[in-house]
Image (tube, rainbow, N blue to C red; front, side, top):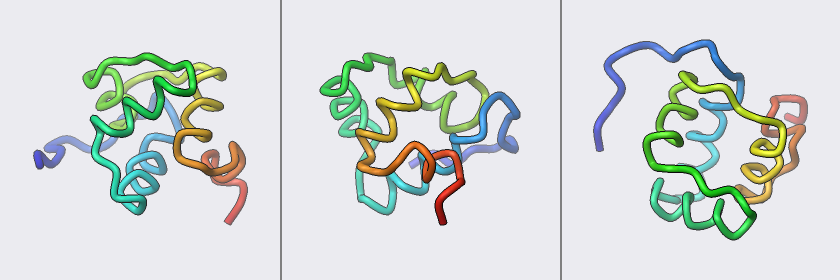
Length: 82
């Protein structure tokens, strides 16, 4: 697995949580992308990588699909639930 050489960006607040939750659930990016598709979100692996690195803005409908694919609440994804 390649590790990021640069610090996270500032385009979203959920990227690092997506990575942590995905890894906690032992999901690879490819598997996560397939789950996202089942919830109506079809994004490329590059787009997901940029989202996780916080180099990409995230649309509101994407937040909902990501939360569903990770089986967490939107609040948890946004850092409201601890």
